[in-house]
Length: 214
Image (cartoon, rainbow, N blue to C red; front, side, top):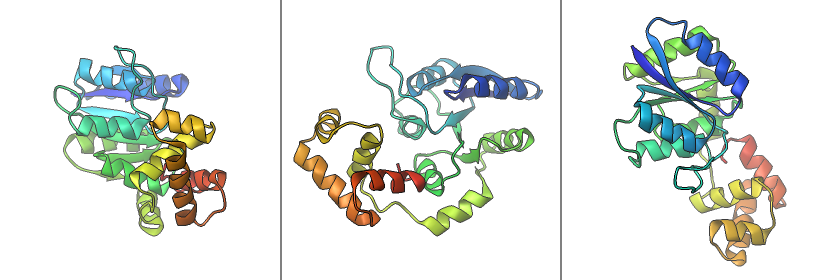
């Protein structure tokens, strides 16, 4: 029996997926989660074999009141870096957005699979079984796109600044959130604008998002 945790912030989608997976005789859904913090808690509580993990989900709050990881990719990183006690689940990342940059980032974060949410359920079930056996499963079209797009030109700090900028707020607010000076934030934004070949912060955020780099 393959034990699963399903993490997705869209309750209707998550419930439907869980219902379909429970029809399979060799799959057991042992936990569900709607945000990043509760995903880590569910993995710690249930020790699943496979985690189905949404890319874009809210951070949520941990038991001690601190914010959880920023998104699904950050959850994958936390699990693979061993910040959670117990065995690490194999991870299949699911996303509504078929962006090539997401694929590269999820694989770098330690995920074993990457699929879009409109994948037929029989393909997803097959992917779960294959990942449980230690194989990698990647949407072939996105794999080709990822090779064409290439890696992100942004540094880790530039990526973090644009991710924060994407949620809105002034330069001062971004600086407070990231514990940086306003001048440092402006420098990172300026560097990102240059690398992405755009003219302002909004365009930098849009370009990086469209490529799945943030």
